[in-house]
Amino acid sequence: MTRFIFLGAPGAGKGTQAEMLAISHNIPHISTGDILRQAVAARSELGIQAKRFIDNGELVPDSLVVGLIRERLQQSDAEPGWILDGFPRNISQAHDLNALLEQLGESYRWVIYFAVEQETLIQRMLDRGRQDDNDATVRRRLEVYEEQTTPLIDFYQAQDRLKVINGNQGVEAVAQDLQLAIAP
Ligand code: AMP
Image 1: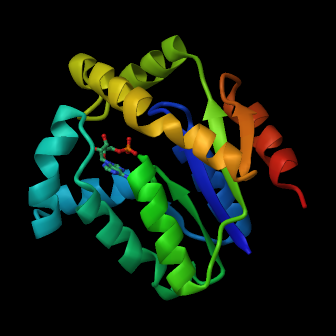
Image 2: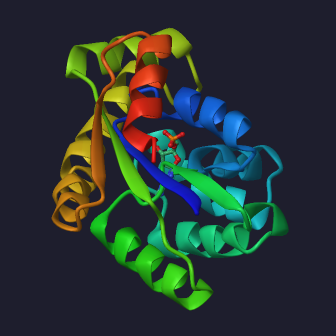
């Protein structure tokens, strides 16, 4: 059962670590942010509905995101496992995910929380220069993270599923700590 949830602020390095772990474990890296950006680029119905929320640094409505995760987790490449990056993003999505996994007869092994100081987050986001990485949106995304996503840390801690990684380090050091945290 190689299923992980990656939790952390925007700019925490979840995506980079998820990408590497997905390759080494041969499981899909499922990033709701990536899927939504692709939908926006393709101008699909989902993309059209999601665009203004993404541009403003707000969360896309739960119904849209939960729907796409429900479909994605049932694709055949997700059978041996997956890494969820950027989902769930609030307590309601976490409940929806638990309900969905119960339906599918699946469960996750660990929730990995990448802890990073605020200044580092801002610098990393401004450096990577994505379209929604401008000054105002970065600030709003960090606020949304504080308000809506950080309650998940206690939520998963209470379920004894949380592993905390020091994400302030360089990519290789974080990857090493991650390997130690998930070693059986
Ligand atoms: P990310 O690449 O994870 O930083 O996501 C980029 C943007 O996509 C976020 O700022 C949100 O607007 C949207 N998004 C990604 N994942 C979710 C989610 N689980 N729930 C709601 N909105 C999301």
